[in-house]
Length: 260
Image (cartoon, rainbow, N blue to C red; front, side, top):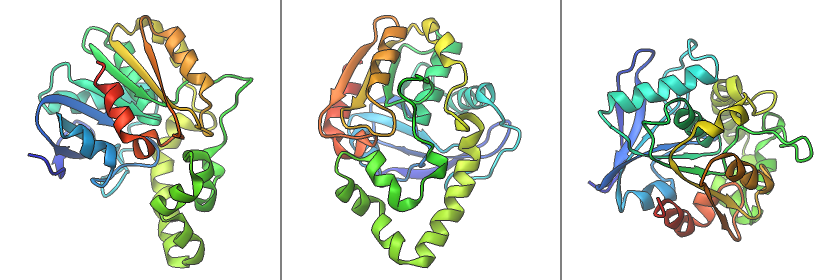
């Protein structure tokens, strides 16, 4: 199976929508605050060598919201429930941005159940000297400059240009974004820090931390902070890539995951 298919899985709290495709070792991919679709180039690339499962956080895409998932522990345990319901044991765990924050928490809470971990520009830490921009205050046309090494190409990818000119596109974006960011805000607002720094030492997994050299949302200095906190972690910097390094430097990210 190579094409990613959208499926539904029952969990304790809510039916979970997830993308599945590819063949090989099982890999669970946790998306960032912007969500994910089957068109994501990194998912397609990972599915060439792995059996990929990419669950949507409740409230994303066409999935149901889950008001009972309220804090970091709830998000973490819910995602472990998803892994269990999929029948997976010790899959490669990959998380981008907010998904990286959740993946790191999963590996810290259950260190004996995660042996391979890839964190792609994860959230979860806060450095006073390097504050992270308030993503909840950004409008569509502002996002590319924070997310991409090449904001012009990034805007074309996101459809942000047409969003500026098309009121209906902007309306749809704001409605979807409000729903998704309302869920994400439970662990990211007002700042994306929920004490992860005190738990990273518990991670036993072989860990790769990948970062775009041009990340303007979460500065690359955070890569060093994660690597310093996780025993044996390896840092991989992707040139000519911003926060969306899986879009801009897909091959480099696949290669980083392949180091696990």
